Image (cartoon, rainbow, N blue to C red; front, side, top):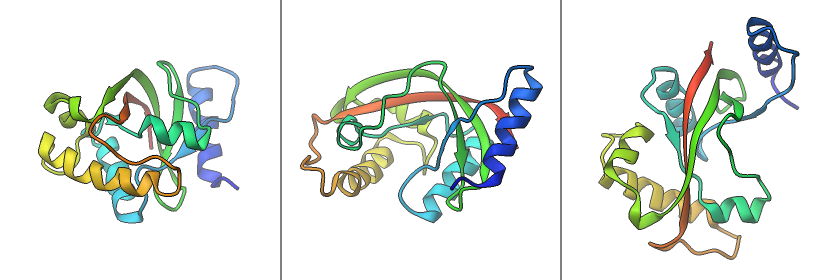
Length: 152
């Protein structure tokens, strides 16, 4: 069951832009409360402007890839709506080819490529556990860039 704040945010957003209300997908970043809540705050601050699940996670979960123009509600760990984001770009890139510029867009830690590689390498091991996929330097990463279109 979705948090009432997600429904309220969708209603308010579509009312503001004078379009028929519709339900948007909602989710939080990461796989733990501390990181999910920190990332949600970084998005609100305009620091975090990208996210990077593995393509293999999408394949194993059946979750469709984002595409430019997609709207999603970002929540905190508890499921409370934080903002609505719009996907502006999606590229699939091997892990080893992620650039420092892209790591900076992710906005986490010190925003360096080395930080991105370290924390994401650990994350992909957790994300892919039980899927039959094993993280590698060539694994495909879905690099999704977004912008906030409706903050709380």
